[in-house]
Image (cartoon, rainbow, N blue to C red; front, side, top):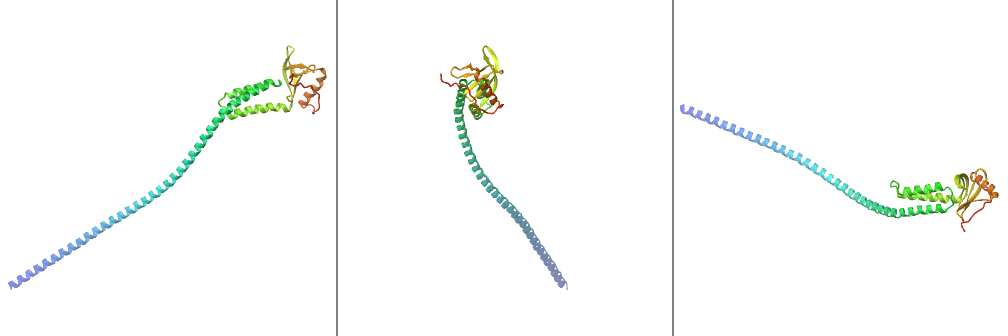
Length: 253
């Protein structure tokens, strides 16, 4: 009986040991599986993280490519603009050089034109001399001014020529002082184009004209008094145009 009981005890002990061993083995397997699952989850998380990073890097790469493409197009456009601007600069430089060359030619020409105009006035009938000489003096002063462009200087000189040319096509009456017989008196002057220049005292007592042959003022006979007076009235628009007889001196001596 004792031997049978011992056997049972040993058997029970073996069973307990076997059960414990099986339980331990099962726990180890479960732990291993859980560990693998955890490792798998961690790996999946890393894979997901890498995938997100890769997607982000890919998107950034594509954005950089688009930016590079835009910059390439912009740079090409800038190159064309710079090329166009260089052409414009070259054209402007050429025009400036031409302007400088033209100015170098126009300035001496303008000065000669002023000298010629001055000489012409001195040789012309002596009408409105103060006004005409002041105009020429103003032109000479203008030529020395830096704030007046070359084109404006040339325009002003041409304008003076046009004024002088206009005197040939009209008649004019004006008052001015003149020395006669040692006295300075005020007279009425009648200019008929550039053909003749007459004077008459306000009371009509003196009548005369400029003699182109002698370059002097000369008195006219009393018979021309009414004709000159009529001419003065016509020039002042106080009488209608009419045919009047007046003497004319030529420039020949």
